[in-house]
Each structure stands twice: as C-alpha cells, then as structure tokens.
Length: 231
Image (tube, rainbow, N blue to C red; front, side, top):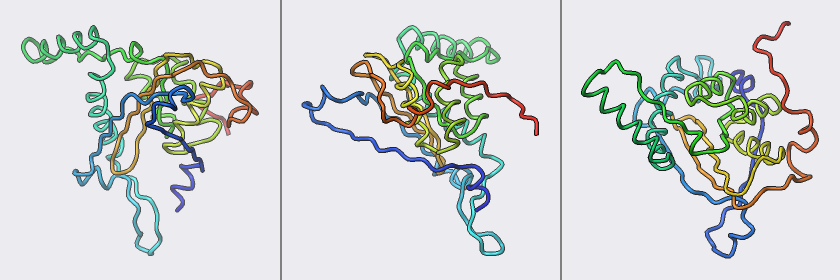
C-alpha cells in the first residue's frame, strides 16, 4: 500500500441535493449539466489504475505506464461532449469551421481549441497532482487565477481525489469570488477509467462563512509554489 499512501491524502465532502422547487431560494447552486465519460470497455483503460495482489500476496495499487495517455483520451471525449452544451454559438462555429477546413483543405491545420473562459467564470480541476493542473491549464488556456483554487487545494490538503473539487469550490467562496449568475466547471478523473464533469450556476452571491475548511488560513493564500524545492 506504499503507492496510495504516498500519492493520496484523506478528504471528504457531503453535498445536499434537492429536486423540489421550494428549495430553490435557499440552494446556493443549480446543477446544469453532468457529463460522465467511462472507458471501462477498453482493457487498457480498465486496468490502468488497478488494485491487485503482488507476487508476495500484498494488496496494492498498480499504475500503468499508459495512464496519462488514457486520461488524455478520456478528457478529450468528455470535453467533446460537454462543449456543445456550454459554449456560445460563436465558439462552436469557429470550431466547426476549423474542423471542416482540416478535413477538406489541409489536415495539418492546428485544431481550434474552444475558449471555455467564455462559458465559465470558475474552474475546479481535479487536484491529482501538479502535472494534471499544469496540463489542463495549458490545454484550456486558463490564467493563473483560474487554476488558483486547484493549486492551493493541492498545496493545503494534498491529493484528496475527487473530493478536492469541493475544497476548491469552498476556496472560491472563502475568497468572496462567487457571484450570482457565475458558472462553475468541475472536472475530475478516476479509475475505471473515467472523466466526469459537472456544471453549476450560482443562485446568489455567496457570503464567506466561519465554518469552512479554509477559514483558519484563507488570508494566507494564495502562496507561491516553487517548481523546484531544494532539499
């Protein structure tokens, strides 16, 4: 169990959902979309994060060398599905024109990366590691502020798997940045292999609370995180 003990920290979150119209006034967010991408039909994807016994009979987690490639494919499938649901028409038209141009005129044209900043004000990215956040920031062309909640969550709480998304949302609230009408994109990964997205819309401006996970340290964040730490 050395691998999970090194990679993961303990974390948890509880979310109360309701489908009753009378709860609309007190609900902080409205769930707009959920997109679930599962690659379990592919044996490589299914076994890229796999719990099993080793030759000595000890149970542990096996991470395949294909993990990053499979994660990229799952992310691509998820984004392809969620894009038409959230992107404005202008972005969808640009993407379509580029796609047609590559097929008809020149396949070497660079594919157009839609600007998801036009669809969301806030991003909660699975804090599975620095490389995960770096890669998504680069591919989605996000600013440092867009990934601040993800980086600070990783710094403060470590890799708490998919519960990290709720620590990130709490960070945004604690900073007083969540306003009425703001849209949030939560995107996470998991074994299976799966990539899931949830889109939320804020019902009201969120006031900072005194009982959140960040209240004892929010004034100290953000902090500078060096790329290389000298030992």
